[in-house]
Image 1 (cartoon, rainbow, N blue to C red):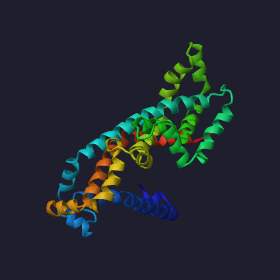
Image 2 (image 1 turned 180 degrees about the vertical axis):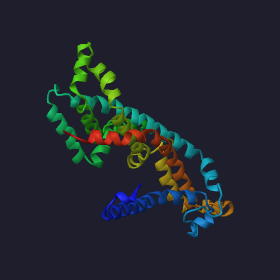
Image 3 (image 1 turned 60 degrees about the horizontal axis):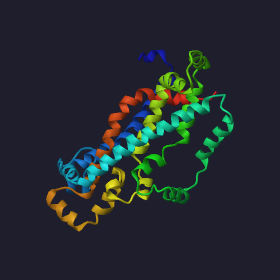
Image 4 (image 1 turned 90 degrees about the vertical axis):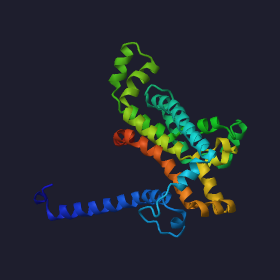
Length: 292
């Protein structure tokens, strides 16, 4: 960058922006770095508060403890089932719904759009939703977790706006070739909407992967809980477990390091997926968020 081409005001603005971005980056990354450092530190160092940026008395004892727990792997597998199954189920509902709402020829289109948007501001609430799931026989059901949260009004509106930005001539050309609604959606709209669908898929994956509250409320069986609920049980139980306190004294790990190790394991899959979707993220948000 040639600074001579810029005025003093522009230089000052660039410096301020750079400093703010740097501070924001540090504030964003530090929690991840701290949790990773704690997970690789000894239990004594973590309990003494010695860990800041790097592991103290580096050890893998905490990871060894959690991978030896069968419930960890059961919960980890359940989280993949809820994330993959829930994301696929959501896309099966959201994409056709958004396509239908984007078509001008849909009768009652304005009413249905307002009806969908209404649910973004008002919902039934916790107890009515719980009673509804109970009456449908979806309590303590893995299918209930996948189906019960398949629809999200924000994602429908985001994808609907993207579909509306596709020129009408594309659909008219497909109609002249004899395509029906399903063929128009599958062969025209979905291929042209990869950025928006990839963005929504990322939203769904993160939401499903981090799903905690309703899984804790609706699931009672240990064999069906996801990793986030397992993490909550671990945090609440380990500190008060006298047997665990004796084991950790001998092994060199603690409740803090075990909890941090579980958090690191829960973050890794999302960090792996994000770079493959990130290139579509900005374009999908911008095009889907603009309503002419």
